[in-house]
Figure 1 (cartoon, rainbow over the protein chains, first blue to last red):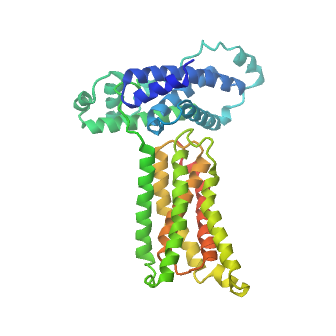
Figure 2: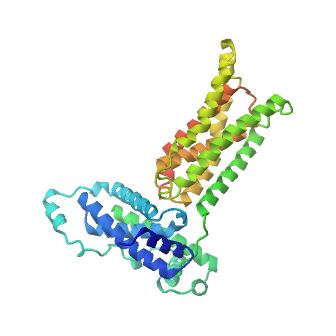
Figure 3: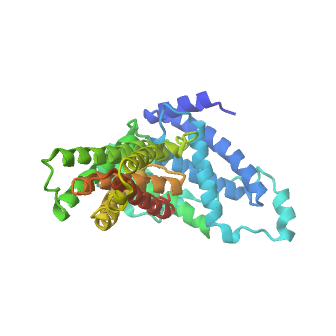
Length: 183
Length: 205
């Protein structure tokens, strides 16, 4: 498992705009978070799919709130605090569906941790629910890897408009994910 | 997907955003005080000036200590191991000064020293003036990532109460330490309680 020093260095580089470090960081974090949530959710009788949804939610949160990390402080407590906040929030949101009938309990327990690791959210499908400009900006820059300038031309908006639409779009996606969990 | 074309992030953004919001709140509070109440007319006398400075010192101490704490509460994991008790220090100091003031005076004067002439105006003004600074502060904290919403809301209320007391001090003509301790302290505590009650709803993300 990645150490504090390693994660902290990756985060510092990510905040400077280093995409490769950021990709590595998100990958390490998703593993860590997956392990954390599976452990926590198993204790309250929830499934591995839910852990995956939470991992996605936290990765979104890490992305949207990355400006709140102060590089003078430790990184692990920062992530852990967000992860716990999202877990508590998730459990509260989905409380109505929280109890698992006893006869299904064995199935939950027997579930293979690796078998069901796909998240129930299809990002592409969720993207379809965004306004045109947000979807265009996110597709160009985040999915196809084009530059902000290219995206501005393709979507017919200014460069700062592209940035704003990406930010708002990711916020909306995070909100969609949270709302879907509620169902 | 999130790591594609990632933008560099300026450091210290949370502290800057919240500090700017509180300063803006203070300017608005001063404006409301000027328009709705007006600066006290006797400010040329030494006694009035000394008491104004005293009230300002108390209010600014409240704002200073609680703002530092609020910035920590707005960053995940940053308030760990930090005791919230530091925010009590200005209140303890003014309470102590108030009691010394009472001890120094004959007990026949106590009632007048504590209740003053304008207690009702103070009780209404400080929470009312605090509304806009509170809204601005909450807006700034929302852009960060508070995880203890109850406490972050309370401290945002505390900051707004302090800012409001600072503005109200320019108008208030009740010059006694026990009055400041009870009515300034008390109304700021009210703002804190209101903030705590609203925090979970307003700050959720």
